[in-house]
Each structure stands twice: as C-alpha cells, then as structure tokens.
Image 1: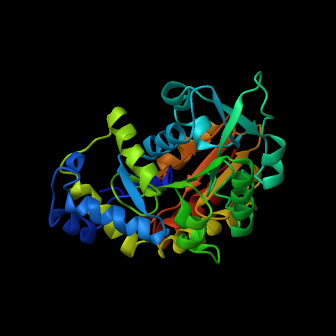
Image 2: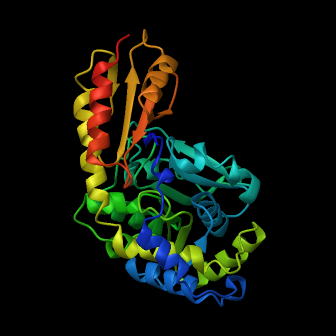
Amino acid sequence: MTVIIDLRSDTVTKPTKEMLQAMLQAEVGDDVFGEDPTVNELEEYAAGLFGKEAALFCPSGTMSNQIALRLHTQPGDEVICDIHSHIYHYETGGMAVHSGIQPKLIHTTDGILSAEMIELNINPEYDWLTRSSLVVIENTCNRAGGTYYSLKGIKAIYDLCKKRKLKLHIDGARIFNAIVENDYSAQDIGKYCDTISVCLSKGLGAPVGTLLIGNKDDIKRARRIRKQMGGGMRQVGILAAAGLYALKHHIQALKQDHIRAKQIYTTLINLHFIKSVKPVYTNIIIFELKEDVSPLQFEQFLLQNNIKVSSFGKHTIRMVTHRDITDEMINHVVQTLQKFEI
C-alpha cells in the first residue's frame, strides 16, 4: 500500500487506536436534552482548562465562530477583524447570512492586530455609522502562516474592548499550537476574552468537533443558537470522547509538528525555484513559487512522489504538518523538493 504524505491541512488527521478505544467505551445520552455524560464531561473539562464557566460542543469551527458572532452582535453591527481572518475568508459569508453584520477589515501582513489598530477602527456612535460591537482575533492565524499573539497583546486588546464596551472573541482553532510555543497557558488566555472557539479536529487529532467556551449566560444562549443552526446533536458522546482524549493526551505533541515544519522551511529557503517563504511560527508553511514555475506542474510532481499540498493563491502553496506526519515522511518531502526542476 502506497503511503500518502498529506500536507494539505491538519484536518486530515486520523484518530489513534487509543482514541478509537475511548470512543468505543463512551457512555452516551441525548445531548439536546443535556443528558450525554461524555459531552458534559468534555464541556466541563474544556471550560476548566480556560478558567471559564461553561462550554458548548459544536460540529465545526465555522459553526462555533458563527454562533459567537450571533451571540455578541445585532443585525447591522460591525465586527472588527484582520484581513486574513477565517471568519472573513472561509465561512461562506456566514456573518451576513446568520447575523446580518459586516466586517471592518484591518490590513496586516502577519495577521496580528494591536489594540492601537483596533482603536482606530472603532466607529464613533453616530446614527449614520455602523455600530462597532465585536472584535475577533485569530490565534494562530492560518493565512498569515500560523502566526500567534503574545499574552501582552491579547490583554491590551481585551482591556480596550472593555473600555470601549466591545466584546472579544478569539478564533482559537489552533490555540494550543500558540500555547505550546509561548509562556502562557489556556487559563491565561481565558482571562482575556469573552468567548473562544477551540478546534479538536486539527492538530489535536479528533475526527470532528469544536468547543465554544465562555460564561454560563453566553453558553446558555449559544445552545439555542446552535439548535437554530441545526447543530443540536443526540448520542454524540462517541465523538466527544475523542475530543476529551485529545485534550488530555495530544497537546504537547503539537510542538513536534512545529519542529518538522521548520525542517521543511529550512529546505525551502535554499531552493532556486522559490520566490519567498513566510517565517514558520507553528505548523503552517506558506511559500511562493517564482513566476516561471507552473504551480500545477509543481503539485503534480509532488503528487507523483506521494505528497499532497494545497494551493493557496496563484503561485502560493501551503503545507501543514500534523501528528500523522513522521520524521521519515519529512525526510522524503525534503529530498523530493530538492529534486524538483523547472
């Protein structure tokens, strides 16, 4: 059997044998009635990690983000976010469909907002201007190459939001990638946001699911919004067990993904057909091919060598390392890249 090295995303991870065993042994109930004990345990455990009161298990990160947008805004409001934000690029216009709101985009190169940038984009309270009500930051930032916030930066943004009576939601799909690279903890992050979404099905390796975490009142309202969006689930403890296992056993392993991503980066910066490579902070590698290189030819060459990557623009390619990628696979990727000719 041919082994495919899938670097398209960390969403392609497969459950481990131990995770599958936890799923098989999960006690289940009806989660819409609040009676699935494994879901309840997962939500309580995750909320505790971030020092928050409650959490809500959702089918996807897109749904958890969209619930947060709906929760913190009213139709006609404006959400302040970075130009690279997932909520802007990859949630199919959900903020307009579900919440009737629009984005105020701040243009950065690294996906990292500062309190000063945000303050300049808060609208005055005039009848003829859209009401600024919510700030969303993405930690880590996918499109910017897995960049992450400092705790000082997050605190400054949160303090500004409190001062200006705005809510702060963190799109923390890869928050633990940021945490293992920094000297802050989940509890530290939890102090400086109103809500945070945490994906279980990326680097953590669960097959599905994201948690929306916040205070009890917000999560109670969020449950109702989840139901309206079709996200009410029944005997879903089988899936929650995978997320619980991931949170207890897979966080520290993310560091190894970052080390492997940097190995690919070190190779790419020395290749003649590469125009530029974004600095690698976590597990995401984004690079641009020179104009005379055919992206299709490059991707086909990699695929012929059993390597899958994703196109991220006209001449831009993304690779993402994850827990299913081994050192042997990285060596093969490096050797294959070095063999490519225009």
